[in-house]
Length: 489
Ligand code: UDP
Picture 1 (cartoon, helix red, strand yellow):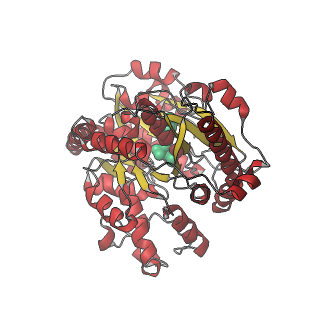
Picture 2: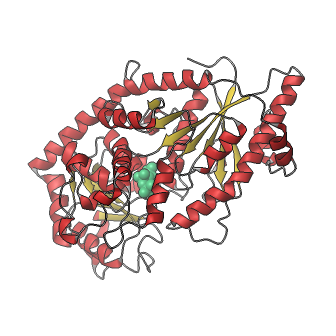
Picture 3: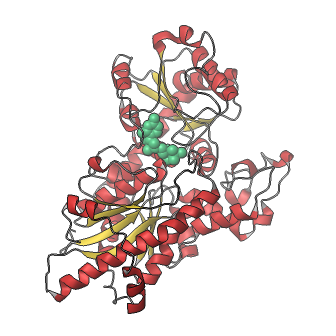
């Protein structure tokens, strides 16, 4: 399966943790298949280079200096897409020039730029790739169910927006098991602004890309993937779960992980701890934090709780925790700012995961046989929560954020017969996913097909001279990264 000649792929991840991680995991997979991997990333949330000596990194001026990106706005994402265009184009042109020089000198050692793989939020890449005639492939970092619901909504947005408060819990039969409140396009005052709809359209549009890669499994989402493939009409490569398909387990965390919680977990009884984390982006208000705190405290179950700095509007932790909370829970509860989540979920002490249902967290939890309490917020999270609770039945959805409901739900997951059934189903679900990763499994086969597909992509014709000339005049290539990594470019 290894490629004969070293071909290079350029990866363009989106700057959020939940997007950066799967792209780096895809990079590790492609590296292990013989490709050389270049990661062209934004300055905001620069990945930790030292964790990935196998990659060449190129930093792009993202135009985001001085902009608060703790909750990125649509405007800032457009701005970043616009700003990154020239840096990426210039970098690629420089690579292509060097390739041409090597060809002229009949130097067969040089890598060959084969394709660009980009996160669907980095939609500017399509323009650059088309202009330079480099094949591009889109990576989707969330579920096919979520993308399918978006594509369905775009066809007739007036069917879904605006809606009445009284309709929030009404089912959407064509999007079963979703209800109005679960649609993945954020609504304000029960309607969606045209510019938000346009943004979601832009990130769902694969432009002239020649294929799509999915961090999901064909067996799990076959009908959704088929529907989407009819829509997009390009080859699909569902090769998830990327975190398990990737050969290297190096950390992809932007924030520093507090490993001391593993020692704390070591001291807990097997299958006794609830892990609580709402991912890298969610921000809650102090009321929700207080209800959650008392819900956890009153459940009487040990818990490990990630409270990310900045994740409670207007407060720093621990000042926002209610009086008497820490005294009441004592050693039974542990709070950290950021955890080594995959290690936590794999720990034998962990019995449940109270999650916002980010797609990475979801896959990481299922693959460690950890059932879930779903507390979704926006975008793909409500869709995933519905699938987890209604279709796969591996979790309970928390619809009301009140201490008594939280306490009851935690105890249901950790102590009840219903909780045991949910645990059994998550074990089965994990086994099915593991089967997809085996030699004859779908993710494994799809990965082989993806490697063959990339390897067989046609060589590019030389880009037209005027484009070259214009771009060569401003050379943005970061020679530091190239020299340090010893690349041939
Ligand atoms: N994560 C982590 N430590 C934490 C919380 C989260 O390492 O304390 C990681 C988690 O393992 C996952 C990612 O951050 O890979 C979050 O991605 P996800 O798609 O679940 O949610 P998002 O942060 O994008 O909302």
